[in-house]
Image 1 (tube, rainbow, N blue to C red):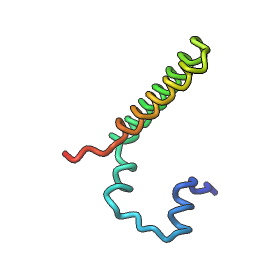
Image 2: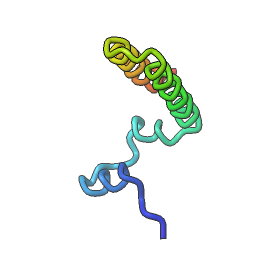
Image 3: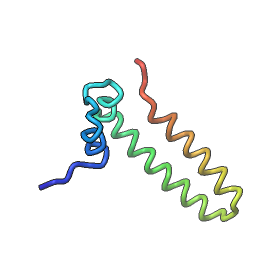
Image 4: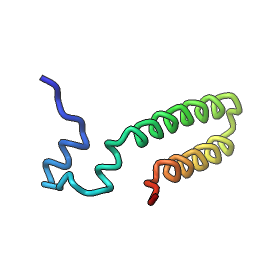
Length: 78
């Protein structure tokens, strides 16, 4: 038997409805594709952090990557 993922268990625990547009957006193929691209971006950012190796560059790259991840995964209103 498959265990439900963490988000589904939390939503069920707090009795949150699953018919909100914000939640339905996370189930679309476009969101899944963006999520895969964000994952690849974080892998590249991590390799860049490892190659540069200074604390200031790690902080700067991770802040930029975090901002871009949130901006890229935002739902379009179109």
